[in-house]
Image (tube, rainbow, N blue to C red; front, side):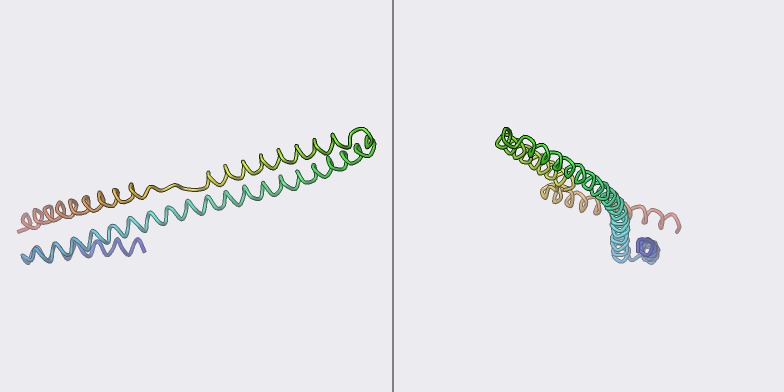
Length: 167
């Protein structure tokens, strides 16, 4: 689609040149306006293509990271099961002396582990979010519109000069 928009921009410049040769400045200006819009579509399509490639790469990376985390979680599960088995064995041996202390220590450990996991999950979520500033976006659109108008006037002047030199 970007290549089709490039071809459309080339056709519009040809039409603008023809209109100026006929002395029809209004049609040349309109054709240049269409050319500028086609070029903007090219930029947008190219940008979207680039963004989609980046998003695909990020997604592939996220899938790889997720696979790694699943593998790590399985390893951690095995480790935790081994630790649980050891803890239960130890608790049975020391039942009379450590019942209260071991329960509270395990509860504190579990609470601490849950807090760490929750904090890590929040950090990861914040890292994946992209922030946007609506005021900056509106200002950027105003600048783009001004630049588009300036570009249109420059191109019209250049086209006039080129057409006058061809006469």
